[in-house]
Image (tube, rainbow, N blue to C red; front, side, top):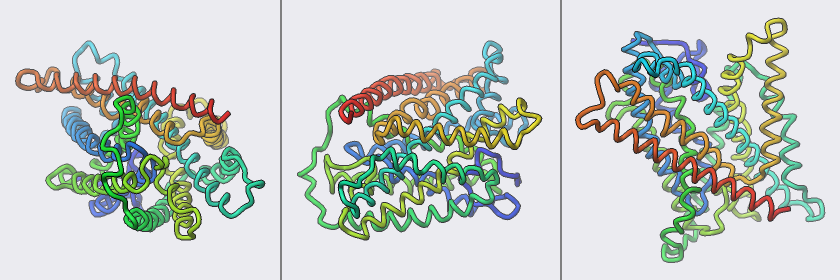
Length: 426
């Protein structure tokens, strides 16, 4: 029976007890809301992409969990995170790949940092756009400010919030955010259901050239890939996590249903006019609709600190040996610099939907498809083998090829879309 203190990679998403420990019921309650932030992301022409992304994520999670458990047993280690699984797999794999163990761990940590900081940039964009839409509705057009002004005005508040280093003081923000999102989702579904148009008014499929952007947007739902193994590791009964029905299957079923319902109803309601976040489509002249935008904006703002926690821990763990004399001051300086960097990047690329697709295509195709397939090959190559007719080999080759294709096409289309929109706005 394992009862461990929470690893850093898991803490950002969990309800904590006073002693920093967690039990099964806490995971069960919070797992469906681990990635609630995606519910208010891109629901445009490819609105069902998140549902598709979460279905795909379930497959990848099973692979990573299985490999992680195998490496736990092989190396007699009680708990491993995503990057540690890669390092352990390469260290115990074929002799030719063992020198690459540290590199594999570093690459996964690198993409985790880029992914999570990219999500922070998306959060800044979303909060600024939501606030601007509300403020513009109640002010004269001559006083309207550019969205970049709103993003810059968030910087002092973000810096202050992210100077908090103890996760215990950030946990209440997560609870408040979850409550606000739950209320906001209920009101949003009300607007989506009222005066619903006919299915015949919407196209059933978009042109093939838009599929790469769909890939990036859908795979964006994979951002929790690095948290799954720590969740399992810290359960009182880890076997309940991936059992049938199990915590993972139950939680993901709820999330998939929410994604599918929100995406389908959102596009059915607003069609081609669907915004990067469905809440931005809510009526501008109704207080109830405006309140939802503010509630979700506040929730996402609070979530920034929790999202920022993990990449900061990874970066500081790598750099703290360089700042022995004044570690606290150095850590605060790095925190402020990273927060400023996310805001500057968001100001430079104020295109919410394309930014989401870019983060998904660049980072999460690697974290969710390519790396798990490589780790599986390395882990099972010698013992216990690649299965009958080498089916694991062909499966991994397919996942790697699909991930590389999505990475290349999704990145190209997203960057092209960003350039086109920035050129048009200028």
